[in-house]
Image (cartoon, rainbow, N blue to C red; front, side):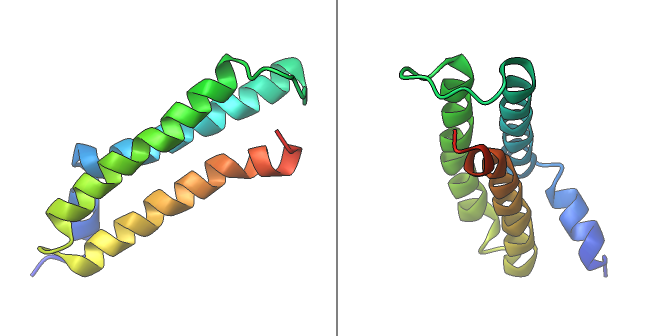
Length: 102
């Protein structure tokens, strides 16, 4: 019987599992890059970085929903662990926005 870690590792090879993680990482890098390059700037109109961040974070929702619809009935514990990783990555991506009040 395969171990719990092997099942999660094999599940993370599926695009619907790793794409939200990659999207969160990209959003995090965009926010930190913007803050590094331009500083904490409060503009009246949002820039391209803010729009990309919003698209990446919101775009995860249908991918996560698809992942849960496919994997939750087959392997609920493993799917919930991967969901926890996805939610954690999204929260990490949102942390600089909250911290810098962007």
